[in-house]
Length: 139
Length: 109
Image 1 (cartoon, rainbow over the protein chains, first blue to last red):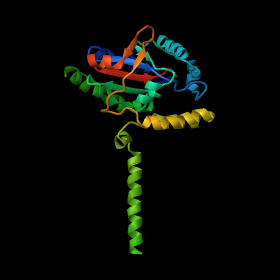
Image 2: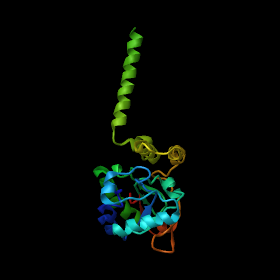
Image 3: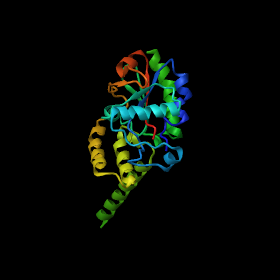
């Protein structure tokens, strides 16, 4: 299974285009959700998304590079270290969305994806972007 | 006897309330923060059926750290991470001082 949001059109969401002036969008590339050595998904096998858990920063960067290139992700991608420090601080695994305000406060924290990105959660995120981003931006 | 019936009724009501709360989709709010990814990781390891002991131990260790994880309204933990296809690092606090930041956590798999 290609993880949401990186493997879906949501990564190229119109939101990132719509709010490109109001907010900075970043992908934070974190530890693999379904590497072949932990929990291999049949859908990943079908799609040829077969990667072992990276053991070094360089290996993670290489996997992220393939991901970004294959999926033509336009959003700038940041690489979490192999110690997963940022992922742990944010509980970003397997997928998660955050909105950080200009005051440094967390304005939105999604449920874990992909299941947390169901319709209602996506609508909530979209709603928060529409409401919060302009409001934060104006303060 | 009457006391016992009353106690059973109260117990039943409490159990019913627990079931209702657990079935609600907004457990995030009840717990004050989003579901713990450490718990999901444990499920993943268990489902894998071949998760090694190290992964299970790591998942258990993660739970403690994840309880201290960022929540809505908290100050966002700062970081400086390398930008893919670039030599520069991006510091979160530098970014959000300019405008709000949307972070999308994920991986290819």
